[in-house]
Picture 1 (cartoon, helix red, strand yellow):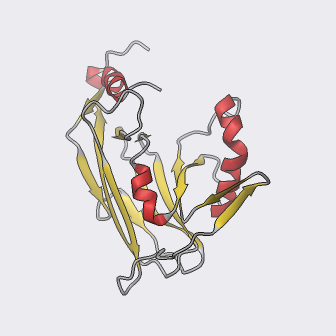
Picture 2 (cartoon, rainbow, N blue to C red; picture 1 turned 60 degrees about the vertical axis):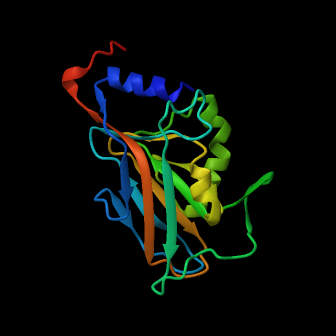
Length: 206
């Protein structure tokens, strides 16, 4: 994996302009929220990347560091009485394969513009677990794959550990797994870098 600075420099050579960091919240036009009933599995938030844009966030563990860039994310789910979801004292594991299981109250996936290369060794290595996670959320979308999963209380913290990029028209989806109350209201706040495409400045020959 290249450093974050190398990634930004590469995108600039391909015609993208790095804008000032932005904060995206649940009122932003590229965010959609959805209700989820208690003790069910459902999508509660969908985050879309605009056309000709890259939304980029450098995680704390990114190789080579973040070159001064950073991002933050906060995700909260409430019912109509402003009670917060997933306030359990214990967590239930979910079997994935005969040899693996996860504790997942939140599952985050990414919707690509094309299918992953099934001949890629990394894709093959993770396919069994990924397919099991997609089965949990009921997805048969060939362009969807899991990004992260974890306990609700820690999902925002865990999100800060690794980097992610959303490219033009890609989406990120957040699923609640058996919440202890109805989810009717979402609070979402993400600080990230924005790169916008400008065809006239492309100078990458690759």
